[in-house]
Structure formats: C-alpha cells, structure tokens
Length: 166
Image (cartoon, rainbow, N blue to C red; front, side):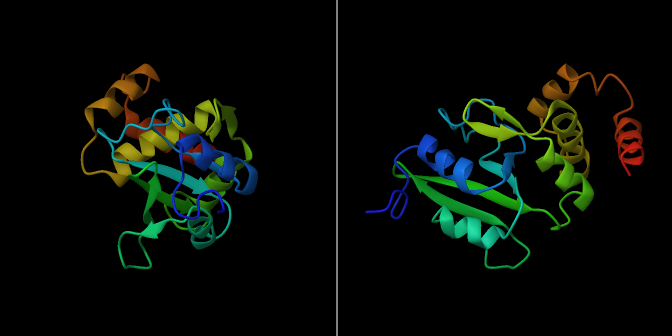
C-alpha cells in the first residue's frame, strides 16, 4: 500500500510528498495549511509548480475535474474528503513566465509548506484579485489593506510593480 495511492490520510502527508518531490508554492490562502484546510471561503488550494502539472497530478493521485486541456482544476481524496486544487505551472500564462520563475526561486518555507516571499505574495494576490477575478472578494480586500495596497491606487501599484520587474 503506497501512501496516497487510494487517498491521503492527512493534508500533512500530502504536503510531505510535495515538499520532497515538487518545486512548488501555495499561492494564497495558505495561512492554516497544512494542518487545517478550510474550503468555505475560496474552496480550493492554488499551487504553482515548476514542471509538468499532469505528472504532479499523478503523484497526488488527483483526478481532473473539467475535461479541458486549458483547465488545471483537480480533486484529491484526503481523509475521505474531496479537496480541490488548481495546479498552475511555469509557462501556463496564469502569470508572466519570468514572474512565475521568480516566485518559485524566491519562495520561503512556512510551517510545512512553501509560499511566495512577501513581495511576490502581495503583488500576485493583487494581480489575482483584479485580473483573474470579476470582483474582489471581501477577505482579499482585508488582506490587501493589511498589506497596505488598497489605501493606494492598486491598479497603479500593480502596474509599477510589473514595469519595475519587467
């Protein structure tokens, strides 16, 4: 019986496998991971990897949710619960490829998982909130305010960051 072959017993064991075999970061909503996964607000875990997302999905025993090559949304069985995960990868167009590389190169260790460094977290969350989403969720507004972004012109802030970092 290989760990994770049927299901993962805990989120910690799933993250242990990621930590040993995949160059990744949890992009956002990582504060309670891996010990306490909360799906009530955003519903999924968003990771960015270096490599083949299908290979990582195979390692996670993840099942594709949508039958489309452009979708990267998977479900993973953890302790008899279906956990949703988006497996983003360098070069997929989700963020600029150079930025994706930088996010992975400057990642930091945080309580059992890798996350973006403070600057990349701040601006990738801002980018996600205003580019990927139709509206900014209330919890993102609170987080961005805590990061001192919404008190300024956040579109200009993001534009300056993108220009300064090519």
